[in-house]
Structure formats: C-alpha cells, structure tokens
Image 1 (cartoon, one colour):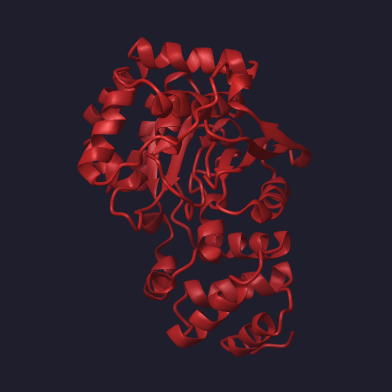
Image 2 (tube, one colour):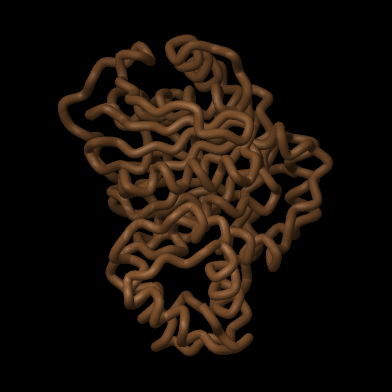
Length: 341
C-alpha cells in the first residue's frame, strides 16, 4: 500500500476492500489517528470496516507499537518481567469488576500489579468503582510508580497514559459495537507489564491477542473467553483459554470451575445496576462478607491472576490461596494502605 505521510484514505480503502494491514501499515494508520490527523468520518469508516472481522496479530502488533510510542509510561523500578496486568477488552456482559479485584488479590500475595483500565459505558466499570472506593485516579506516573514499587499495586487510567486515544473517543461513543481500540488497550500497559490475564469478548480474538502478547515478549499470559460470553472466567460455563509462556503461544484448552474446587453454578450472578451497587459488591467481596456466585467468580479469576503472576500452584491450590488472602483481610489491608499512600 502506498500512502502519503498524512493521507489516511488508502487505509480506509484497504479496510473496506477486505484487505489486511501489515504491521507497518497498521502502525502508520494508528499513528495518524493518535496524532489527531484523521477526520472523524474517515475514522468511522476505517473502524467500522475493521469491526467486521477479527484483527490479525500483525494489525494488533502494529497498532500496539503506535500506542506505546506515544504513551506516558510509568517509571517503575520493578522489573517488567514481574509485573502483572488483569485488564480485559470489555465488550462482554459485565457481572462485577472481577478483573480489578482479582488484581488486588494477586498484589496482596506479593505479585506486583499495574492494573490498566478505563471508564465504562455503564458508568460503573473498573475505573469508576475503584475511584468511588477512594483510589487516587489522577495520580501522576511518578506517584503510580512509587505505589507499585513500594506497595505492589497501581491503577493506570488509560486516558491519562494514552492521550492520543481521545481523538477517537467521539467516533467510538457513536458506534454500537466494540472496536479495534478495545482489543489494543489491554496490550499497551504503561508500566510495561509482561504478565497478563486478558479476557476478550469474542473467541475469535483469542489467538491474535495471544500471538501479539507473545511477539511482545510476554513472560506468562492467558487469554480467556467464557462460553457464556463473559470476558472473564465464568462459574456458569467452560472458559476457553490460550496460554502464552516466555514469548511463545504454547497451549490452549478449557477451564472448568471444578478445576478450582468450585461448583458449577446454574445461573450467572446478578450484575450490578449502579455505581453504588458496584461499590457495595466490591466492598463485600474484599471484606469476605460475600458468598455464592460472585465470590466463586472472584476466587476463580484471582486464582488465574495468582498463577500468571508467578505462583507455582495448581488451580485448586491457587483458589485456596485467594480465599485465604480475602478471609485474612490481606486484600482489604492492602487497599487501605494504597488509599493512605
């Protein structure tokens, strides 16, 4: 494809013609978007055409490179090979903020966690919920680095670390489907996390996301999609996974609740219906007051985070560790330390 430096039309024509971008082309196209050099009608056509099929690993890798080249990174001292992220793509039914709470459980066990996240269309996603708990969402990267290095957890608000994405915000809000941006976000951790649990809304995204993680050098990663549509491990249905280990896609398979010592639930836990309810659910889970499907779902996702974060445990033993961390108030104590920092 031949395109002038500021000409976006060849990328739109290629996407609408069903062509696949090379990594170089994807990086160039996304660079123009992030630099604010693409008019909204053209961007809407490009994103709309790309949403008709899963992106390739080359396309994801190129777009990821464009994002990271422009990101406000977190200047951590902790080695990236140790840092875990549990950011998912969204775009799937949401029960509660399992990925963020699972990240806190992993951090309470000693795994350094840089949780990447953003605001939700619902108004009570991970960013809104953790902010309502009192977490400092507007912290500068240097403060985030100190929190991670000293306490083992920080929350990286995507819009603060990837300001160029604001140029696509209006188009994305007007589109009724998840876009390429939803897939790229979890791949662009601003603390350079090399351990990742990534839930995706569509099973067709699992392999390209896993291949992109591998190409970036991911030390340990799992890409998930539950058969009931969740972008997290489910207690109501099998959860498919693709496993990344030390820069290679090494395995794929299925996780069942029974592998974690959890009974299969017949119905999904009731989702939160407001920010107030989402905060109450989070507090109950972290205080060890919750029971039933929500607690089991958190235990299952926390166990995944613990293993990917570096604990050499079976799924069942990792679930047991997650229960101990919650019931022993180590997770709540960590959160209180973070809020006081």
